[in-house]
Each structure stands twice: as structure tokens, then as C-alpha cells.
Image 1 (tube, rainbow, N blue to C red):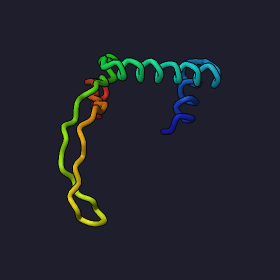
Image 2 (cartoon, helix red, strand yellow):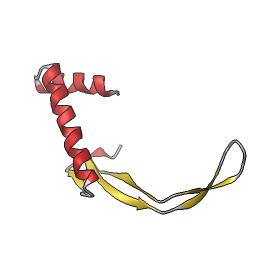
Image 3 (cartoon, helix red, strand yellow):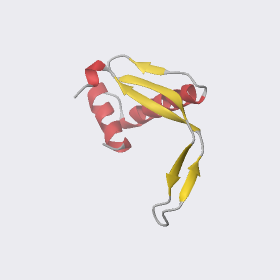
Image 4 (cartoon, one colour):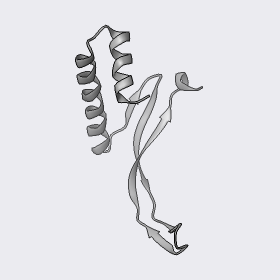
Length: 87
């Protein structure tokens, strides 16, 4: 499912127009992104939680040359699915 299909699904299930659904989805994404950039955890009961974790530096390998390269440490977003999302 892409963003357009998600907007269509929100519109059909909520009774909102597609334009209103797109505004709501964009606002939700912006709020989640803003919270994660501040280092906060975002939990949606029944769906799951997003958090920011520090990934340590490591050694990788260039697939074209086989040469070892150093991959620096960075922060990444982690998603943990909720109980209701278990497939």
C-alpha cells in the first residue's frame, strides 16, 4: 500500500474527503517525525511503538570491490509492533 492508497482507505473508512484525509495523514506523519527527531518514543496502543536507538559503528564491506569500509554510528528509528498487529 502506498500513500495514495492509504489516503483512499482513510477517506472510505472515516467518511472524510480525500483532501481532508491527506491533511490528516500528513499532520500525523509530521507529528510522529517531530517527536522522533526530539528523541521521544511514539506509542500507538494496539498498533505499535516507534523509538530512536543508537546504532554503533561497525565494519562493512563494499560489495563491488570487497574492500572493508567503516560505517559510522548513527541514530535510527525502530518499530516494535503491538499485540493487535501480530499476524
